[in-house]
Image (cartoon, rainbow, N blue to C red; front, side, top):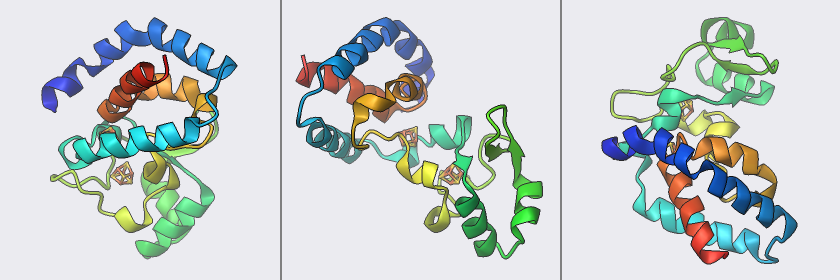
Length: 163
Ligand code: SF4
Ligand code: SF4
């Protein structure tokens, strides 16, 4: 996994134009069963890929925190929401709450999430490859494949299954 993670930014860059073309075409001509195809590809990939050997998303990017995330996690940590924000979050250029620093403070040394049961919605959904109407999040996916080996593999497999 480590070697793959090291190579991933370059692999994603090398594939960028090809992937962009593929997603442009997918938007124009979306298979009727795309949601099913994506669910299959996602499930197959995550049977092979163990996030505990990776945690690259938690180490390099971190999620956005919604107000509901802040309230839920603060309650879990027995902090007031405002105190949680002051201690762990900042506001980014898009006006969203994000982590003050990465790797995420809540990632332990064995790649476990210390707040797994109450983690942000964005963490639960990342890398969004089982999302309905997947063709609508192509720009996000083009970014995510440089971070997430599973997303990279899923897009490679998509190109084979949807010629
Ligand atoms: S979601 Fe992707 S980047 Fe995050 S730990 Fe799993 S494989 Fe790695
Ligand atoms: S909250 Fe948990 S899942 Fe989300 S980035 Fe931090 S360690 Fe990873």
